[in-house]
Length: 441
Ligand SMILES: *[C@@H]1O[C@H](CO)[C@@H](O)[C@H](O)[C@H]1NC(C)=O
Ligand SMILES: *[C@@H]1O[C@H](CO)[C@@H](O)[C@H](O)[C@H]1NC(C)=O
Ligand SMILES: *[C@@H]1O[C@H](CO)[C@@H](O)[C@H](O)[C@H]1NC(C)=O
Ligand SMILES: *[C@@H]1O[C@H](CO)[C@@H](O)[C@H](O)[C@H]1NC(C)=O
Image (cartoon, rainbow, N blue to C red; front, side):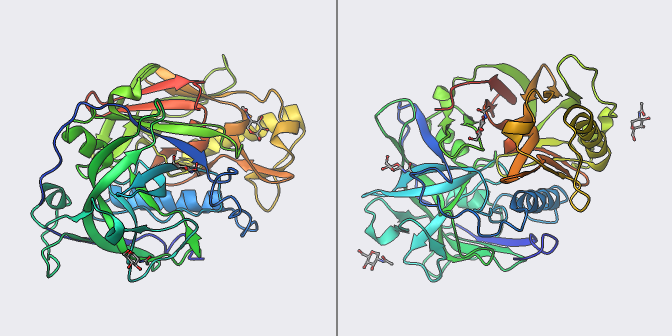
């Protein structure tokens, strides 16, 4: 397992140059169900527990944090990067799409931190082990390669070299040796609609991964579904071909429950209910966190709100991210929040931090933390309420740990804090709508 520090530096090139995008249609309701990676129907259900000794949630969150900061600092090139490969041995939700004609199911991770939708693609030079069948482009009648002058290819923004045959190539290499490269291509993607029995389809551009090396684990999910604001992202593509308005929403059910579901919806059927808070879109989705409280009706914790502000140089701020399990707070915020939580545990529950791993505690969340004070994330015009299942994460049978960690220079609201809420990202109005306790099914 590569260490977190040397993970991450990515070098990515796009070799560019265009078929026309398919004509607009009036169909609406592009959506799909999400399933828990350990659900009974998941091909990854037995993937758990290969590395219990490691805190994979913490590790993957920190590598994610480092990756996003590197992007913020422009140490990495934008748009065509994919995030560090998620570690499958953790609780998360995958989207179920199908691609091609005849269709192949693909299970992909949602990633609001990158734009490209890529999957492993046969015949490949190098593919890593994947639990479900790999998409075979030569079998699909609707597959076409993107040419180098395609606007999507150009949107990835680098001068490039084309392949000898004039097709658009992409390449992403991670410092730890993981990489994916291949051809930007078009094929028909079907959304197994969450709201109706009718599948919606669109011809979309995606990365057809021909050389995929994943040295972190032997296998993983089949790809990444980028939900960032860039032109190549699925939400931008579906809106630019007139299929949907430029918005999407997702809802993760109970992360600790393998039977929980969720959904991902694009465009008009997003039904953006709930309170709205402004969102700043700059590669990532930034929100205005104003303060944090522990206990409804309690005064806010003593935190200087400048710790949450995005600096003029683009650093800092608070992003909402679908690819981090834990939340991350800058050190001065982390200390205050952690101290408040530990204080409640000591006084109300007689639970103290472990000496060697001071972010962890002996006990069971369900059994030992009844009526734990609600954590409130105060946002502009609204807020997010977190109960004990979002403040903590059960790691082993009898050990639970904080659901947030510390990291310099950037705050992240992770999926643990997002569970059981529906988040609607409106990329036209720059708002995030937050609906509490929706039915995520
Ligand atoms: C994904 O969707 C397909 C087609 O609707 C279905 O057959 C399959 O069982 C689903 N997979 C999971 C893991 O839910
Ligand atoms: C992909 O499909 C082609 C055409 O049917 C077939 O010849 C080839 O063996 C398939 N490749 C893999 C790796 O399944
Ligand atoms: C989430 O799932 C866990 C594990 O199944 C369960 O014990 C807990 O009650 C659930 N939390 C909520 C809020 O439903
Ligand atoms: C908050 O932090 C900023 C920047 O570090 C500082 O200028 C300001 O004085 C602080 N405000 C308070 C009330 O401590």
